[in-house]
Image (tube, rainbow, N blue to C red):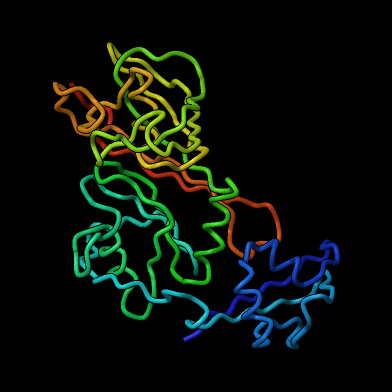
Length: 295
């Protein structure tokens, strides 16, 4: 098995060393090294050294092997594909609409019933993936981005690290929140509860959440949230610390709240792997029917 990617550079492309183009495609150095020493990077059908220029109209072909990756084939048992709702699919990427109550991935060998198990069944036995790029909490619904091949995983992870993947959420929160704003408190572990995180907790890391108020109800506010960083429970922690916990949050909310969690990953915007322009793909996940229904 191998994975081959062929890209023709546009006529307006400015001549660039081949190595720099591979770096611009976010390929890590160890993959560039493997492509070079095994001559698995071709320009117009012939091997070209990394320092030579590529020009507009040139065709660049890259071939990856399973041995290029530490874990080329994820150990995930396929489960029923009945609940898989595909929002977007290409040869390399998959965005599904995650359902409430489904864990994103297994935590133990042989575990089944998670979103990753269901997607493995959807892709079938001839597809090596799926490969998870990020996760949604068990009770969170909405758009979840995965890759179908191992070659794209390090590329998309670098795009995420470079803040090229934008995640926008919708949420109902307790109380009356107004205007737009940004939460910037760092988030670390809760020293008293290993399940939880807290503002300025142990080993706190920078965390940035942008919010925009969309609507109000009595004692509730609908907000749009955009993650600039991706800390565990980031949205839930920032909102709870601000005194506006998510409606239905069993971990950070009030003990009298019996609603289900009202947090939905509404939109993902991301670049395509091996793209030669700045185009972005935007995928929107329909809001659950009961999202606006709570007590």
